[in-house]
Image (spheres, helix red, strand yellow):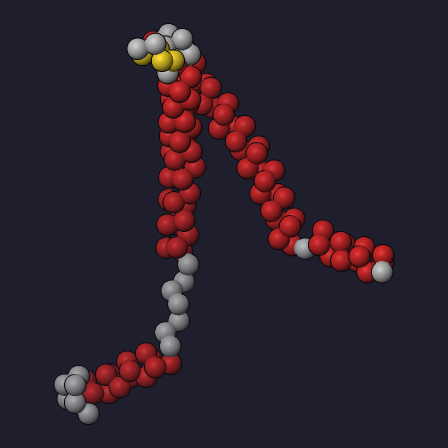
Length: 130
């Protein structure tokens, strides 16, 4: 009984999608650190021009909204980094790959239809008569 349980556990660990999922989580976490660092760098650049973009002490009518504003600005910058540094180049690359891929082969019915149309044209008949 224990041997069967260990065999099932071994199969679970060696299943392909589990390994792929683990790699995706690790890569996602690492990529998240890169995006966070880049966003922090952008915040520093913004800080050079207009002061440190930290709104933690900002309040409106006695309600502290600073932490929300800082988080919102960080979110918008992170979204911009992901869109312009990842999504846009990926879409352009995907479009280039699609252009390089060979077109799907025509089906037998399509080829027979083309042959029929060519035979009609050679016989001097219109495309709708045979």
